[in-house]
Amino acid sequence: MIRLDASTPDFAEAFTALVNARREADEDVARDVTAIIRRVRDEGDAAVRDYTRRFDRHDLDWRIDRADCLAAWQSLTPELRDALELAAERIAAYHIKQIPQDRDEIDSAGIRLGARWKPVDAAGVYVPGGRAAYPSSVLMNALPAKAAGVGRLVMVTPTPDGNINPLVLAAAHLAGVDEIWRIGGAQAVAALAYGTQTIAPVDVITGPGNAWVAEAKRQLYGVVGIDMVAGPSEIVVVADGKNDPEWIAADLLSQAEHDPTSQSILFTDDAAFAGKVAETVNRQIETLTTAATARASWDANGAIIVVPTLADSIPLCDRLAPEHLELACDDAEALFDSVRHAGSVFIGRHTPEAIGDYVAGPNHVLPTGRRARFASGLSVLDYMKRTSFLALDEAGLAAIGPAAVALAGAEGLPAHAKSVAIRLKP
Image 1 (cartoon, rainbow, N blue to C red):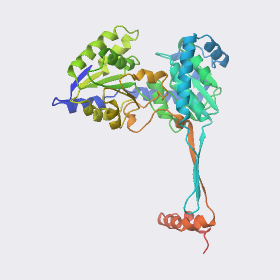
Image 2 (tube, helix red, strand yellow):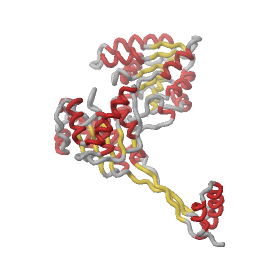
Image 3 (cartoon, one colour):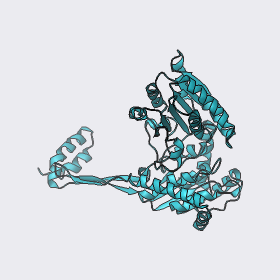
Image 4 (cartoon, rainbow, N blue to C red):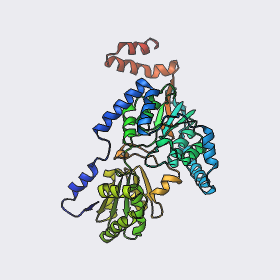
């Protein structure tokens, strides 16, 4: 774990190294994924079946029936069913408000112009099934697609040794997923993008995954729409000394337990508090069933940074552009007003990041690896596209057509110019 103090002479250099540290896929992963994609594109089912046998250790039984999802839902305890229903209700309510409005208007030149939004025909959702199974990811990916009006919603999820978490199936039932396929990894992303003899292709692929899944999404962008290329999870916590160190330690570990490449960073203006949090993190790790993963993540990628004031931390947070940013302090609203780059912000001492992973409403599929500088979290818009339109009458064309003719001529495109000029009266 890195400890930095903003008052030391070497801080700028050390912090820059932290910002620029890579925790994502290397060239070997990219090379392997390229080969997998090419083979799935060329061989279809045979390639997917072979990769499933090799990586997930079972002979592929392609589809999971919707009846199995219903049975999984019915087998849940009332407590779990209520929890999933609460999460689904809140996620759906949040995302339905993201649906954009069509535009259709007449401007001052008498020209009709506007835009219409339509959902994609088919969307594919990737749900991890390796290190852990995430029913929350099913809801976070599927419900925005349903809100958008996607006609065919397809889910792929790896089933190591043929096993699948019934909670994932229950969530798929609740979200109304149309098709579920027992495949994962780069080969599943390629199958969704190109289609196989068994699986019809989709238009958009969303959802988190490991380095191979992320690299496959990166390489297939343009063949299909991609929500984002997500890397290892991140959390940055800005906290003053009035917090309970137990709370803040738990917040940091909530991301560290995801993966050894996850990153957890604390900014504080209280050096004594920083020490208490470090001690508490080390103690709490030993109580976790995910201790090995959390320890590897914290030791390799964790950081505690002492700053003169919490306001001084915000420009540093913006350089990190973290996936998750917690503001656990008295002046959280004032700090929030200054934040420019973050995937999602959690304001106040009683807003742990983990609440956003499950039931709060905003999406937990967020940009990582500093991509919050230019990207946003998953939304309804990822499953929709906008079509602009124009309608001119003779008067409208007369009003703006001569300018188009002049510009086309200046660009050396005479056919463009003639297409407009031929419709203009002498």
